[in-house]
Image 1 (cartoon, helix red, strand yellow):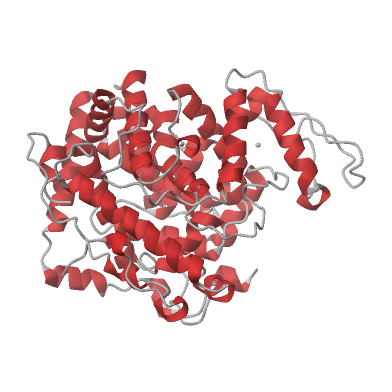
Image 2 (cartoon, helix red, strand yellow):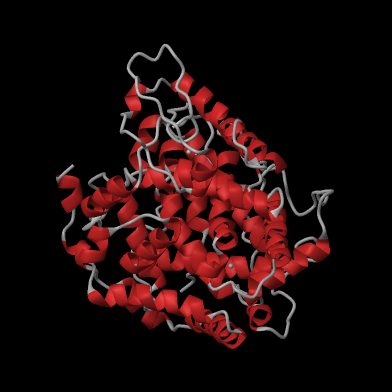
Amino acid sequence: MDFFEEDKLASIGDEDSGLGNSSDSGKSGDSDAASSSSDGDDFSQRDNRRTSVHEEGEEEAEQVKTINSNAFLSGNFEWETNLSDETYSKGSVLRDTENYISNCSNGNAKDVLRFYTTLRNGQQEPVDFSINSKSPKPKWLNEEKFKRGQKFARDHLFCINFAEMVSLYILFAQKSSLGPLIFTGMSDTPFTAFKRYLSTVCKLISWYTDDIWSENESLGKNNLILVRGMHKTVYNALTNSSKEVVEQKTTLGDPERTALWCPTRNLLVKDFQESIPARPWCPVVDAEVQRSVWVSQTDMSITQFGFVGLAVTYPKSFGIHLASDDDLEAFLHMWRGLGYMLGIKDEYNFCNGDLQAVRDRTLFFLQVFAKPAFRTVTCDWEHMCRCMTAGISFYLPRVRFESSLLYLCHIIGVKMPRLRKEMPFAHYFYFQLMRFVFYLMKFQSVLSWLNSALYRVIRRVQAVPPEILSDWQNRRFSYMDQPGKCPARSQT
């Protein structure tokens, strides 16, 4: 059974958009990487913001917000009042937001403003699909720094893998990220999520190991080709499908889909809405753009945040105690290079800049994008998140949705009293265990052991016999026995 099978993407949207196979999605990821002595190297052979002043003339908004700019960027602020989003016209909010950021005394305020504006523009610009293995190296590339970033990633795989996993809770809350993921139909059950995310880890390891800049063929280079092809296939399918088809296939709510796994959605929304202040309409997040671009530069930049943002901004919370700032900058340089190879233009590249710039960018993203989006999470969001954690638990059994979500909220400063009260004791124990383990990783021996253990687990699950995979595929979860029923959906 080939559970790294990706060719389903080639036929996505065929019925409705007449698409055939994309030649760019070539399945050339079968070649082996060069051997190496470390666990990570051995594995490479196998597989990857209201505003400070509200302008006069907005009659419905009489109350003025005053927020300390530095406190905003760090997340340590509270709204003085609650105004509905409707009281803010789109144009004034955009001007106020930009004026607010530009008036920051923070040394990187200009960078944050520039990047915010860039993200807004990037919604209408697709990924650069012309980039390929024969494209010239970017002039800014420092290959030694890139290799140092690769070594950091291999040596901290356990840490960054967990940071990436909880970052998915943030990414799934973004409409532009969750919709295409649902559209592919490749991770909306625990077993398909298992295949998808294991395959992703394998691709990442190959990128963290192989020389993707060499003219020689390698598994890492082939996986870049494969991922670029997958992105282009999804882009073509969404672009060429009618609006009705896209609306239907970017949600799990249609009757032909399986039951939705969302038992705690209402509870979570209550916690989120009490803990996270409402923010005004945001042109990047909320605009119903005349969207003609899927898999846009903005989408890819936000996705890139998921691979680096939390790990470099809260390193100790993920067990990264022993790395220097230079190591973290090298990690960002590596992801800047990978982003380039995946078609992200430099002005949109989330990793373009020094460590502090990326951290400021991350804090801004969390305040303007991530936290407010949690206030309106959907049944689809919880379902996809639960499938993701359940899929990962096939090979990492202690991974739980409630405990890992609570850990993320603990890090970014979101109080979840209802979740804490209602979650099973075992899940709360796992949350506390995570905190303890990531503290212990300040000791090199603990870090090395957990890192090596993760490599061994992934190698072992790749060798699982077909009959066990079949058992996993047929495993039943409680939501599957209630087709078409979602407790949260019926109450909204």
